[in-house]
Length: 380
Image (cartoon, rainbow, N blue to C red; front, side):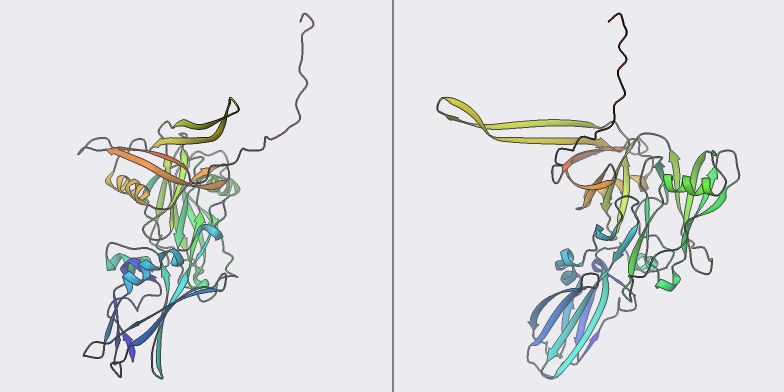
């Protein structure tokens, strides 16, 4: 017996949504074949197994729809935010490995792949993602960022040995562009032979600090380009540009269709509404509260959207099933209740959406500080 396909075994990782049919060929008899699918997490050592049996066709073959199988395993395959710093937004997404074993009698064959829970519109785009300098992000290549916003880019290095660093070309208001190092190296001690998606913080605050350390303190930054450099100093061809704005913004994080995370920013004036529905009961002539169904909803908006790329990015955020909002130095998961958009050809476009926390935050402990003495005028 042997596994045979014509589409995706040449790739170092497999995108679940781009998987094709996998054939088990040359099955020696018409007896059922026992399959076992294993999902392995090398970071925790956990293994989940799912056995099933299928019978071969008259030609001694069995067709497996791997896209359907991997979609069914999506909750297990997904790489979560566990290894991501809540402060910087940097970290690693260690990919899960899916192994498929087929057995009939004394004969056994096995195939396995690191899997990303994502999908691209075309096979050519799936191949492009495997270039070591390609960013696994859906944001427009030229995006607007804000001085208080969090920005990240994700990379899939070919191996730990190719991990060089991240650099930025900074565009100043009064000076020529300068290249500064954002991340010089990366701690890959925990990375084994399993491919890992790396998330790098490339927020304005980090770029500002890097520029200041390079001697450009006080120079206004108008924009910056982020690009990958390997250990030999070769720059990647894929560049992500951020144009800096000083407007007030609220940063959201969401799982994009590629299986990694993107940040997006709401700049329209937000609004918070609160509703309470109280259930009461009466005892001994006294009415008491039994339940206070308290609900707080937040409304935010995209502000002006000037391109189809940017609009598609907002559509991706609103269609995601995993979203977070930045609260202080933490990412808090949210549920988007409803959204609406208005767009006309060759006209201004905007998005508005209503959301609430998936888990209501507990009352914050009040920060205590030393108070100054109060000056009271004599005449008082």
